[in-house]
Length: 310
Image 1 (cartoon, rainbow, N blue to C red):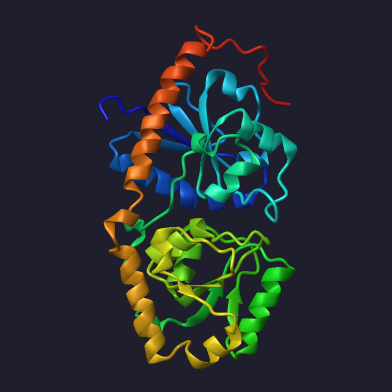
Image 2 (image 1 turned 45 degrees about the horizontal axis):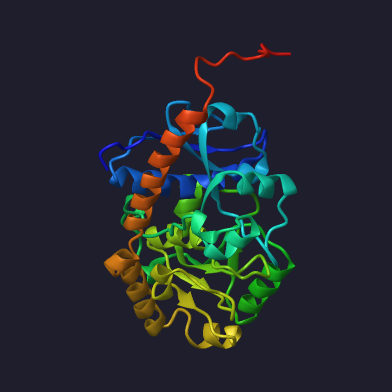
């Protein structure tokens, strides 16, 4: 692109809400991919830039409507929406309906867009900045690691795995960033199971683990439809979960297959590299920036009130 717009990645974090740190993984990937396109990218928490196109992560946690008056905003939806998905607020769906949105899964789009063609879909892939030397899989001290929110559905799935004779390690509190990544690198595999009945594959979590060099073992249901980059990179479980773990996990055949899956993700078919998707996204951002400049109120911002502290 000749006119690459400045890009700002904004993570919404309500006061005291530590789980917004989970958006750092996806925001860093967006930064990596957009920089590959030649864009200058900044990142902040709860801050927007008037001189950039703002990609907003976590707007379902609350987004002041007046922020869109002065800022060009494109919202990144990472929630599973629609039947069987997350119970987000009507305000969030209304925000998506009237705004520019980018999504990771086309199945989410009908919940808020009249024309699915209006919403670009971007996939997550190999993140080279996470690839560092790690212990061989056989030498890692953690057999299976699960991280993320739990509910009865996930608890039942984890219990089935443990019934096969393997311990699943879970965190007793929220852990994010480098501390969590150190544990992922010490695991023989990360266990993935769906939280919602919509059963959409959690690629926004899996790409991070695979890029760290840790295999992902995931349940697979009739409605699970992973992006192409994950079809040959994830170890998909059959319906007989217990039998698969009893007869396959930690065997020489498992380690050989796991290494092949990791290599497939790292050096997979160029057609699975979402580079073109992000090039299209950057072009959309440039067009959006130009359109927003025509409708934005001219002149410097004049706040109606300033809170100097209580």
